[in-house]
Amino acid sequence: MRRIVLYFFAALTVLALAGDAWVSLSAGSPMYRPLGSVWYSLHSASLNATQAGIQRYLFAWLWDPAIQTFLLAPAWIIPLGVTLAMIVFKRRR
Image (cartoon, rainbow, N blue to C red; front, side, top):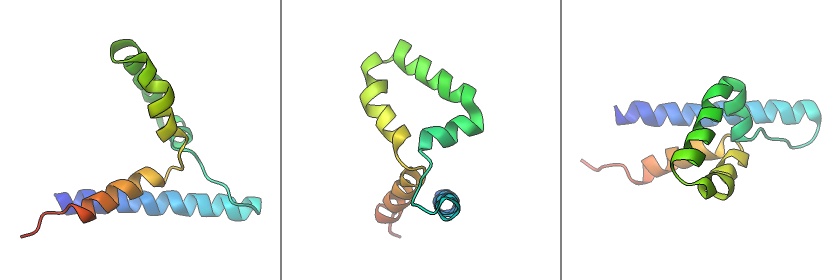
């Protein structure tokens, strides 16, 4: 099961990098899509509900500096980080 999750996040990383490479080649300059933009284009209602829930039920200050930083990062950074963390911290048999 752990290997499937690892491959899933690795595939997400590759797909996001390929999409950014495609857009960059089309534009003629390096460009990337932020994670928030990708999430919004996939399912905007869940992004809005997440923001409302965090600001209303957790801490309002948590959304603006912390979570927004992740949403403005390139879309491939987060799955790459999860993939690398899973590789580094994998259980040894």
